[in-house]
Structures are given as structure tokens and as C-alpha cells.
Length: 356
Image (cartoon, rainbow, N blue to C red):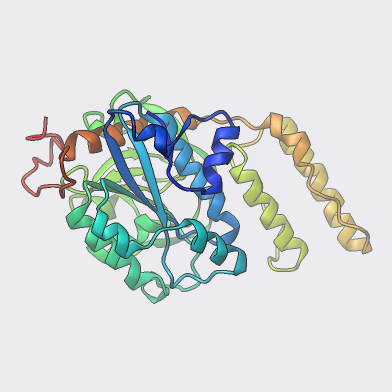
């Protein structure tokens, strides 16, 4: 079943205009269909706040046909915001204290921009830990994305991420390494995932705590993992939620930073992402930018319109399959009368044991 538009959040209208099925709240309430309530802790900066909403809302709305989905976005007040971000949050986001009272079936935690060498020094560290601790006891499953994965592994398991020296940036092949886990049921054994990060938590760091590695890559490391019980915490290091254009938008921001003198070197192209023609177009644009900077002439705009039809998406179908499995298992594990926490007695080899 589709997303339910229970508020005026612009993401609902945007998704509807793109052809997604979004039910009005009054209509949804007339249907005798199970509702799942999913929290979205959106820690992304203002420039990416709405785009991140759309990416996760779209994945949830397209993936599973067993329930109506109420997604409850919220954030942390300790994150620095500008006027536009504050207004958007004030108008459309919910309060964590209210969500704790109402309860959630599942939770997604996004990444965030960081400014400190140690995540424990970030202003969001303690409030994020509060959310994670509450979810551990009260939410069936929490899905952590990228930076959130690194933060949880440091807070709960004492594993600090390691800087890789340069940015891992592009689309990389991955393989399923635990084919019996319910999260990868029906998933291709080899598939692509976008990554965009400077830091890594290794397979060794996962496994020394009994964390389960489900999807790995020789080039980009772990993408998908889970807590020892198999489901209470789910970890992404990659970005399967990304749109086809997301890496291009990141590249554009890095080009702007180079033009403004905020980075020394011109940004490299994301790996395994661009068709040859698109790479050639951006190579020509780079030459034009560097010539304009040398001669103090007008900087040419990045030719996005020429690139949109030259971007392949090789990850979205697998992302849908994984999210579909995640929500399907949340549905089965959640008490139909009242949301209940994941039980410690669940057999780690079978996250659905005792709940079928």
C-alpha cells in the first residue's frame, strides 16, 4: 500500500507529481489495512533536507504492498540550521518526545555533515545516542544510513571509523555474503550501490562484536550489516536511497567549492557512474572552468541538461528489494494491537523465530 499524506509536507506533493501513489489521510483511514508508523530522523543539512526526505519516502512508498505507511520526520535541535531549514522543520516536522509517546514501528536515521575529528565531539552526539537507546528498547528495527552507522558502532560497540585518506565516491559492485538472511531474500547476489564518504568501518570491526555482515565489496567495503540478533539494528554504509542525479549534484557542489577556493584540487569524477559521453562533457566543462579562472572571465555553468539522459541507475531495484524485505519483516515482528520492542529471545540465526 502507498504512503499516507497525513500532513502538508511538500514531499508528498512532489512525489505525487512524479507518479507515486500517495493517499490522502481521510481516505486512508477508511481502509481496513494495517498501518505502519516509521520515524525518519533527518540529520542532513538544510541544502539536502528535502531531497533526503524524498529519497527515503520514495523507497518506502514503492517497496512494499502490505501496509499503509505513515512516515514521521523529525530532527535534532542541536543541529545548526538556517532560516529556511528552521521554517521547514517548524512547519512540517514532529517532536521526538511526542513520537516516543505515540510509538513507532520502525526508525530510519540519516547521515549528517560532521565538523569534528571525533564523532563524540559533535553537538548531535548525545541527543542521537538518546534516540538510538530509546529505539533499541521500543522500536522493532532501526535502519542507520552511512554516518549514523558510524555513530552507532562507536557509541554501542566502541568501534571508531577510520579515515581512508581520500573520498570513496562513486557506484561500486557488491556481493551478498549471507544469503540466508531475510533482508536479502530475492536480492541479486551481485549488485551496485553508491558510496560517498571519507571514512570506513571494516568487516573485521563488525565481526569482532558479532555484528552480521550481509553485503560486502572488495572496492568499497561493507554496505549492509545487522546487529547480532539479525534485525534490531540494520546498517548501511552506502547510499541506496540516492536518486540517479544525486552524485552529479554532489560533484556540482564540489566544483563550486573549487571555484570559490574552498578546495585546492578540481574534484575527480565519481567512479563507475558516468557514461563515456557524460564524462567527456564534464571533462570539457572542467577545461572551460579552469580557463575562465586563469583569464578572470565568466565561469560557465555546469551543463546538467546535457547529462540527465546519460546517467544510469544500477542500484534502485535492489534498494527497493532490501527495503521491501525490511518492512515486510517489521510488519511480521510488530504486534498488531500495540507496537512492541524486539525481544532479546529471538534466535540470532532467524530474526523471525517465534513471531510467524
